[in-house]
Length: 595
Image (tube, rainbow, N blue to C red; front, side, top):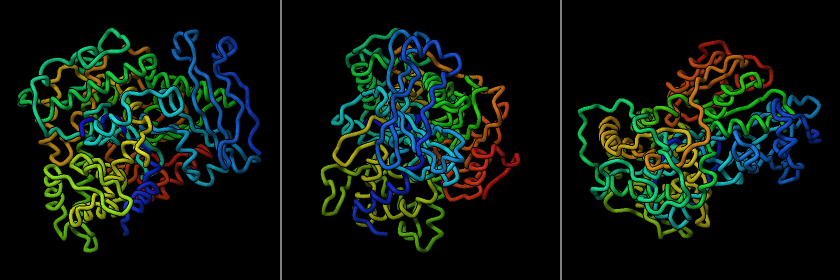
């Protein structure tokens, strides 16, 4: 596959368990609503009156127990007269209206996962006490789903460009199945891009040398944009000065694929691209808060949603009631040192994979590897790199090969949650012993947003566009060559897949209308609860510790697990702490560690 993804995609946490189970079944493997409020947001009353911004449309039924509406917001918050876009909003009204506290806004992961779809699909996204006392509200962030969605590739292009990529890159989203949240986490590696999730191992080319080309040279620039979107040196991390600059094999193909993605974004979504930053989304969130009639916001953010929540807290600290952040992203690191964030993710995913293989080796019931899962995994990866296999079964799609890219995408998807390790073992055993790639292919499709009918959602497109609006990647391609070589040495099973996760942004020539890089102290905010998981592969635990230290009122709760996202996972300790905080505003003792 050419285009990929782990850049900043941490995906959604929630879809995993049920979605993975459905994937296995499909592969044939065994093993009274509250009154609408009209309270103008602080500082936005005049704007709303003048431009119709900030007023929800009438709520209409859109499913069992669900109501939907749209919310107009300025395209450009600095120039509201320039026009508006509509955000898709959904809510599940509180089950106990007599004791309703207010609205709880769910901040989805990704970036690029639809918050509307998550609320619609997962009625038990929160514990019963939360669903009783709050309207659970979700929305599609600008550029995502039904909210002025961006487009960068056609479905046919995604079939070819993303086939080798880990399109469900793990970066800022919470992954399906782990807990709550979802995009895919930002795929591993904190920058968006077709290179993310793709191994650098096929073909070479001289075009890989030199500086990133302009949009025109990248295959036809549609939609202007002066100025380079990626800072020349930012995010180079700890790349050693003496590292070899030899061009990794496959590098030229990755460059060409990334250029194709960027050119498509400019061609089909050029008008939206300057206005997709997390800062703009946080400003939208404040308009939504007021439109819901809430003087102070109660919100839960998972994975990339934690980055959106932290940005909101920094911009509007006194407009918070409670903010719980799970699978925490350090926005300062993500925005200003994205390659270093990719390095942390690669180390964390490698550690999670090593832990899975070690646990499988000790478990006599593990179906994979016959006592040597590490050796079998490495040999399977080498074999699929040379000779792909295919899905088997009566209704299986036998037209698409299951190669090394599909394998890695599926493995990363299942590493989001320690609870999914038995499924990972089964999927690997089917591929290794029976040459059956059914489960691996289904999981890779889940990661990439590919539907059963062959169409795709726009999570990949939105992930690229939002990440490139937020993050500053180097434009010197030699930096990526050195980084890929180093990361492959440091993390031999995972590094080559994640190393180029943000290289699309090296070719991004779109000026950004607004961008916030800190500080993230949120002085004046009430206590903010952060939940960090020690073995989280997509949002490594050091990011939670870092943001907790930056916040003036941050309180960190720790869970020991190899899982992306803790709430609604397997820890009642975590669930109870988050529920008590959101309902009663009580906090766990500082330094609390949940088993």
